Every structure is written in structure tokens, then in C-alpha cells.
Image 1 (cartoon, helix red, strand yellow):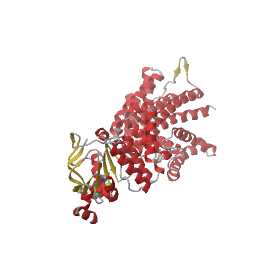
Image 2 (spheres, chains in turn brown, cyan):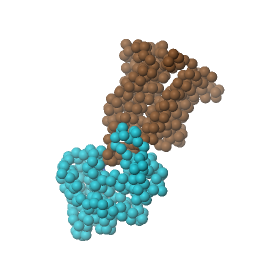
Image 3 (cartoon, protein in one colour):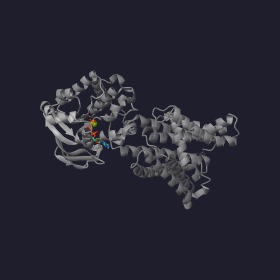
Image 4 (cartoon, protein in one colour):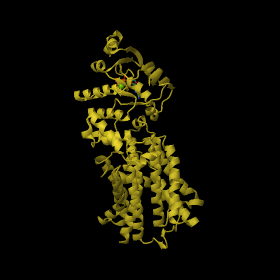
Length: 288
Length: 242
Ligand SMILES: Nc1ncnc2c1ncn2[C@@H]1O[C@H](COP(=O)(O)OP(=O)(O)OP(=O)(O)O)[C@@H](O)[C@H]1O
Ligand SMILES: [Mg+2]
């Protein structure tokens, strides 16, 4: 039972990541390969603040979110010069840079050793400790993020994002300064990713740079492609599926260590099959 | 408000798509722009609407002249347009195609708003005018070519600007649609709007236009009243020479 809560907690954290990236990729059509970087910035910022400043989890998370959004604003400005494939490559470059900083700024991040002993959140006097409690704690954030995403995608702003995805040039001729809309959604998504990062660090109590590599960004992209672009529910389902997949493989009778290796292959095969037969994903409305 | 080009130039790797073109679009009437394929008609309105940067010369709008035009400022100049190669928002509903035109251009305001009743009413009014009300919940990509052209016209109506540039709006439309859209153009003119109509069909040009401008190889070939211009020898030759 404890293990199930462990899995659902991880699913919820990835669902938060997927919901955020889906705003950028599914709704706005910007193929950002940098999402794990913001996830990492949130995780590192709150871990460092909690450990070295003894800060409360919520304050640390808040500051992590602000930092991530601030960085996203700068990076978004640079990325706004690119589109299409170049946008994807430039954003990937940014993820690589952030990984490099985590790995090499040892005084701050302890480099490859990572940061152990990250504290758990406290609600009043109560420390959220058990897997079950942490799951409900994470679920609470997931629900908030989900509702926020729903509000955004149903607003006029959300409609404009789709317009950018469909034909940015035409939209500009109708009077939109699309750069601002793209920046805003990028910053919002980065904030959401930082929430997931704080939750992750404090749940596992340990982070290291490897968790935030480009491959992780690609994994989140795969989640939303599977669930369906431009569909918030699809993002949640895609994330859950990806977290549960290795367990499903184990249930199917594969030994654990083989299942772990097979996971990568199955992800890859799934992506290829999806692109061939259902490019809009399971619940998506829109093809990349 | 008048719209003028002065020695306007646009080239693509040696092709002079618009070549030292000086024309004036008269306010409150329908001006036809014609010319053989590739004579630069679309490029002209692409330059006016900021799609392509200006390579030389100027554009005068009202009392101001510009040697560069930013796309997002085009509506501020009271100008809007349709696209010859239809550019509706394909994977959005017909309704959303119009609502996006009617909603706030500010990030913060648009985050706080869904469609206001006023916007919904206006969208309904426009969709009924262009005959797409029944299709309001379909994705634009599911519309026929002619219907997507109608949606292009709908967006122009929703923009509600003084100067309206139509790039071959009738191409690919069934006769009833053509009738509907020509009615819309005449109606706009009655409301005092300025209309530019790029069109190959001489019948429609004669029916609708008060004035015509003929382009050939990016240059001005002839201009004046439709009947006179269409009878001009060089104009006939330009078309026959295709
Ligand atoms: N984006 C572009 N890149 C390169 N060349 C272009 C571009 N747009 C137009 N041209 C060239 O400029 C010239 C004028 O094209 P344009 O589309 O303006 O003609 P048009 O008068 O609208 O023709 P049609 O009646 O076929 O629509 C053509 O030679 C065309 O090939
Ligand atoms: Mg043309």
C-alpha cells in the first residue's frame, strides 16, 4: 500500500510537470525541451534554502517558484527569437546549461554528490512524513495546478495561445504582440515546474543533477504527447501512465531489473507508434 | 483615411515583386487591384500589412508615412485583411476563430476574461452575416475551402477597421457564397469603409469596383475607372500575354 502511495505521489509530481509543459507545447505549439531545467531550479532552490537557511518548505517553494519564473522570463526573451526546430534546439541548450551549473557550481549545489537530507514539509507542528500523507499533500498541489491550468486554457488568453500555435503571423496582423503571450505562458509553466521540483526534492529528500537532464525533459514531452496535446486531463493521464509503466511491465512477469531497462525501450516504441497512428495522442485535439 | 504607397519596393532574390510602385487607395470606395499571376498584388498587401519588410520607398497612412510597418500595429492604422492562401486558425472552432479576433490584446486582461456577452453577440452577428453560424462549433479545418474563405471574410468584419484588404476572396467559392460576399463588400462600402479587392474575374471587377489599379511585374500598368481601364490595349495585352 505504501508503495502505491509512492507511485501515485510520483505520478502527481509528473502530472504537475506535464500540465505546465502542455500549456507551452500543446496549447501554444512551442516545443520546449527545457522543462526539466525549471523543475531542477525549483528543486535546488528550495532544497538549498531549506537546508542552509532553515527555511520553511512553503516559503522555500515560493522563492523557488519566483526564481524559476524569473529565469524563464530571461530565457523566454532569448527563445522568442527562434521558432520551430531552432526553438527546440535552443531550449535544449538551456537545459544543458542548467545541468552544467548544477554539476559544476559545487559550493552551491555540491555538484555530482547532490543534496541529501532535504527536510519534509511541516503543517503547523505536524511533519508530512508517511507516503500516504505526502501523496495527499502532492495531490492538493496537483489539484490547484490543474484548476489553474483549466482557468488559463479556458480564458481568452488560452484561446490566444492556440491562435499562436495555429498561425502566429496571422495573429500578429490582427494586432497581437504575440511575444508577450509566449513569454507569459513560458513563465507560468516554469513556475508550475518549480512547484513540482520542490515537492520532489522534499519527498525523496535527496536531489542530484542527473534528475534534471535533457532526457527528463524529453520524458515529460512524451507524457503529454501520449496523453494528448492541448488537453489538461490528457497530461495527467500521460504522466500517470509513464510512472506506472515499469510496474505494469513487472506485473506482466518481467523481472524488476529487466523491467527497468525495458521501460526505456517501451517508451521509445510507444512514441514511434503514437507518431505513426495517433499523432494527437490519446485525448488530444491537436497534432504536433 | 487614405492609403498611399510611394516608390514602394519589395524584392525576393532578384525578383522585383513590387517595383517602385506609387498608388493611392481612395477612401470610401472599392478599389480593384488586378494583374496577371505573379504581378505582385499579394506581395503589395503583404508589405502593407507588415508580413514582409519594406525594401524601399514608403507607405503613407493618413498623414503619416512609414518606411517600416510592424505587424501588430496594422490594426492601429485602421487596416485589416484576408489572406489569399487561407490562413484561418485550423485547429480551433469557427467560433473561437472569431472570438480570438474580438478579445483583448492585453495579456493580463485576457487572462481574467472568457468571452464577454458583447463579444459573443458580435461573433454571432458576424457568423450569421457570412453564413457560418450553423458551423460555429466545427473546427475550421473541417470546413470546405469556400467556407474557410467565408471565415476569412468574417474575421475582417469582426476587426471592424476602416481599410479592408481582400485578397481574392471569391476564389474557390460557390455562386451563392460569391453573392453573399459581394453583398458584404457593397454593404461595407455603404458604411463608408475603404475596400481593396484583388480579383481576377472581370465580371466581378466591373460589378463591384469604383476604381481599378492594374499591376504588371510589380509596376503600375494602368489605373482609372473599370470600363476605361479594362478596354485599354496594354491591359488586355498584359492579360493575354500570360
Ligand atoms: N515569400 C516569397 N518568397 C519568394 N518569392 C515570392 C514570395 N512571395 C511572392 N514571391 C514572388 O513575387 C512575385 C509576385 O508574387 P505575388 O504572389 O505577389 O503575385 P500575385 O499578383 O498575388 O499573383 P496571383 O494572382 O497568382 O496571386 C512572384 O514572382 C512570386 O513568385
Ligand atoms: Mg496573389
